[in-house]
Length: 416
Image 1 (cartoon, rainbow, N blue to C red):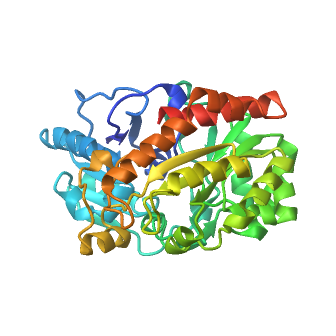
Image 2 (image 1 turned 90 degrees about the vertical axis):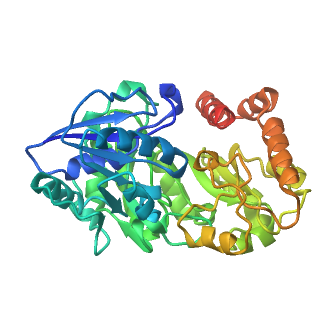
Image 3 (image 1 turned 180 degrees about the horizontal axis):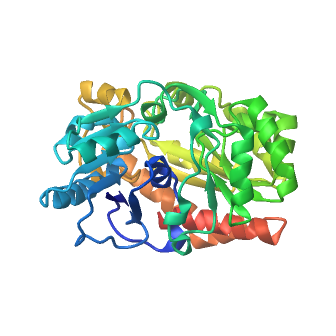
């Protein structure tokens, strides 16, 4: 069969605003031999809709759901089987089946061959879901050769782990990867490092340093390769002297940490009490001492937030000397228990999926008005990402590489 895999997006964007992702290359790798596979990523290039593949698979996030359904409806009108997958499809499979012949819930690696076989036999089953978490030791190398690498930011993507050891209230990771934390064999990850076509690597894991034993083994094994990499981790990594030093020696030059809030009450509300506000400045300083830049996630709209949260946050961020932040208004994802909680309380005020990007109020807040939350977020992003502020933060760095990296991170958040 001719199989077409699509990453749905609302619009095509510049290559410098996107990095390669692994979901569709991993699905392509899991496809049984003997089939022709193409990948089209609408984030970076307009997709073809005048072709007639034998099977179409579409991956998408919640804010791209309507576009994914539009593409699916188009192919189905020509009686071409369509399968949906990804985060939104996993939590809203019944909705997906209104536009597709099948939906893959959760990880696709081990159920995809069955989907392909059922399509060939003309007996699709509707919802496909693995009975057990995928054994990461059995994963095949993702088919990155099917992507036009010239259209992406030059970061080679690698997945070393799946899941997270924490259970933050707002996080949706568990709905795709389940509860718990799994690791790939270190030698498999190192094989990916060795084949990387770029000196810059992006580890796409939610929390690469969650398993200390695994992370130490991985970082130690990476040292001889001379790569530079970015990763996501909990901020507590800064308090593990040995592991942090190994990360730096292995080539870590940037880390994304979920700061979420500078309010202890909000962190407790989010099941993230392990983040200690009073230790944030020292922890960021520890990263900086080893040449690692810190990009943080900030969320506004927790029930404990009051109208002064925006000024308090911007003052705190300056005080702790964080390099950049990605700022969002609280998003409860449809189909999750977090969403159902607010739905039961009658506080969901926006059901337009295209607005679920972090810049629109979705939940009526408790301690301020909707207007105050939206205006405060707008003012915060305008002030924090003024070009003079970005330049000031960037040129405080001790090296040209650090300056350029900080500029890219800040300008990227400003554009988004």
